Length: 410
Image (tube, rainbow, N blue to C red; front, side):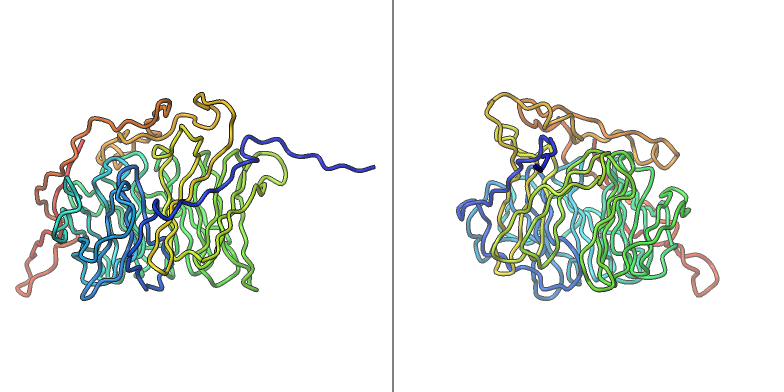
């Protein structure tokens, strides 16, 4: 007599539910870029989607409540001279978004009140210029205000202080295109993947490479993310183009794995029990995803026990919300599903972080739902020279050009 023991888990019955047609966003001219990017970013207020635009690069910013078909003349965030490759919302200001482009620049935008307006937004608050080739990735620091990472096809990482427009650190340890970059929980380390099939752990303040490990053997893009306790989860391909994942260490967490061009979202639970990565289930749809946005935990609906929400972008111009929910009979707040999570207040200033201070994210309770903090939402701008912009003049002296502006917010 044999029987199968079912592993106990609070996430064992997680299921995905796609949005109804009225809950979707339609009429989107989805980008045709071949760059490996999510092309979509979400926060509790807005949805950002990279779009096709004539004569440069642009993306949409859509209030979450504005579902349905977009007007043909819906305004764009446009100001790049080349296609936009990546976008990322600031974790401490839901009105601020960074964009990276083929035009070799990074731009930071303030979305005005009562958006959308009648005209395009084409003036960024800050334009950051240092990369020599296209910029494919932008990632905000998880705990320090105004710290932004950018990675370019010039094989260089830049750590920016957006508040002064300065490059705090240039990191040139990669030998090929950088596929992905991720901060650890307190922002004291970086993990990157590269076309050279190596995984690097980097000190972002000094630029020192602390560890180099072997990545996946396949030539296709691979990704690496830090988990909360410092362990690293990677996805990639074998030499035979078979999909793979790896866990560098173990902890208890749920991860969702999404592949561009696939029709599925697979979810796994990671624990300290062998085999450490446990398959839970798969969400299947009929059409492949062109891109995928992910809602921060503070934007989830605690009243329906939603633990994650995706925004799936289709080639046909539709963006569909997909909710991951744990069914419970009780209508009470489920504390085990919602431990305190990162809020919208930074733990450090940019200067404190660069001077060597570390701090975990400031956590908030989601009991009763997320309530935005009383922060200042308007960026103020003051120009400041960038030392990397000092170029020798024809007469042998130095000419200083300001590449960006100063922005500060509480």
